[in-house]
Image 1 (cartoon, one colour):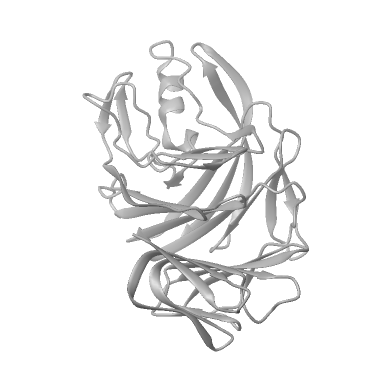
Image 2 (cartoon, rainbow, N blue to C red; image 1 turned 120 degrees about the vertical axis):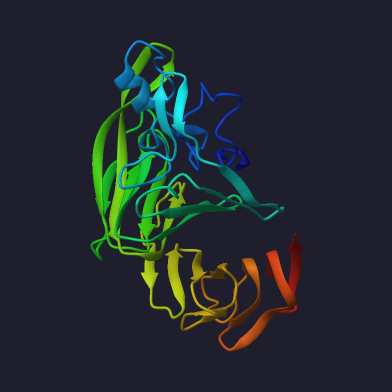
Length: 336
């Protein structure tokens, strides 16, 4: 269960085993996370509330949809059978964990949807750009039509609301308790608000708000990207941009413009960037559109910017950080 954090920013990612022994106290929380931004807890685990007082509530608090994870057709990754037992138990495991001075990266997967009539697989990765924000990537391989729900459970004293951008895209913004903006890209879908509960201690529950992003996909592979932006002042202009061979996003502020590229084919390209990395992040400072000040790459070897190669490795690297120096050359750090 890696922790992706810095001072005032903390994300706890669950990509470990379902539990121990008979897993009696486990929840179906594979690939879920909790988040605190600017020192305030915002996205939370629901807690337990009860063991035997109510079967309905016991199952509800343990379900996948009660956690900050992705569900398929409303099903849980593990299916409960009794208050302390399970009918099915998903195998969840970490596939990658990179920690560097500039970024953290974790990836996990589980097989909880492999026994469905139309089997599906879910892999989630989280990139933490230190002192900045998080990028959550959900990859689903489906063998038939499926509804994907990405759940975000806020603490009971948060007041998240929907905010619509000029391009019609919806953001979920919480600025009462802290400053956090959620945005989901990759597939057309709808946001819905649900009333839920959080149990901070046994036998007590408080009303809370859940926002769910829902989309229906056909068979094949779908990637959903969630930006978790804990900005003191929201740029509020994250958007999808034109690309080839993958998905590309732009996040802009007065001081910088960031680009995120997720590769689906051999290469992913925009008008400015070209890369064979599975995930690429590049920051351009305002006033300098020719070369990025910083680059982070996951699972690749090459990056071209405006036709110039700035990262060229002999073989794919698990993680790369590159920073432009005063001489215009890039200092490259590799992570295994």
